[in-house]
Length: 199
Image (cartoon, rainbow, N blue to C red; front, side, top):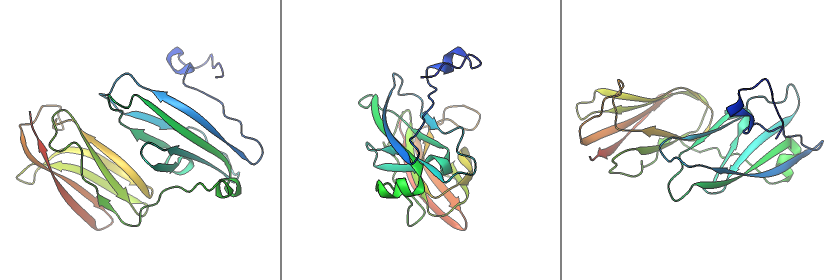
């Protein structure tokens, strides 16, 4: 770790300066969490300016490989049984990444995968995949088709993503038990999946 006196004290322990050899390198690191009530974000704040380099994060536990130079942030929700997660970070030229056999996951199709757990009580994870870069909107609808919560709205690069819903409406009020729907919309593609909130 490198001391950054200009940064707030709480951030200093989480900041590292990775310096790859000329062609590249691969590092292993561990994320340990004590709280399964909020997501963990791994982000890339500064990439290489005008240099042919890539930064790829490998999450073996979920079988995901994400190019951080493109997506800039990776989010996961720890579970009580999964408080320690091991990652690999590959950084280097495009040739180094190719020769190491590392390839970012790019889905062939857009879609909503089944949310879990379903039925749910406190929180549901909503996995979805985007096949081409586009604006994406993920919302929760009630049984009448009314929007009760926005999960995500914004531009997404191709890849696998997770949305999260805590059973609250857009004003932070708890919603009643019952059937709800997750709605994914991107570039003319729409898909809806049923989820059940039980209290």
